[in-house]
Length: 157
Image (cartoon, rainbow, N blue to C red):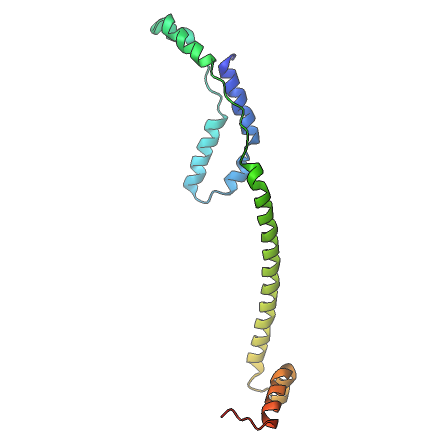
């Protein structure tokens, strides 16, 4: 293989090395999407068949084939220049930091809620046999509130 078809294959090969096929595959959720993705990957990795210019010369004529061959060989595939990633990389990195912070807050809140649920479950099992003094030991703020109301002769009327 030589000439433009080799250039096309070289560019495709270089591009395939920079594509995170496994990372992209992890994002797919449906079987149909996985099948389509596998087809795309196979098609991308296949090497194109070289053009048999002599075959076409015999069937069409050398003048027209030479014109197409010249046009084909003059094709220049520009090198991809990523102008988007540098713009969005800092924003993405900031979002990752915010995500980690939110995750930590969420874990702390989950832990707090689990403790609260455990306390409510415990209270639920003990409430029928618990005395007021036992309850006020766990909730001293309520005892203070009730004592203040009694002391101030406030009975909620």
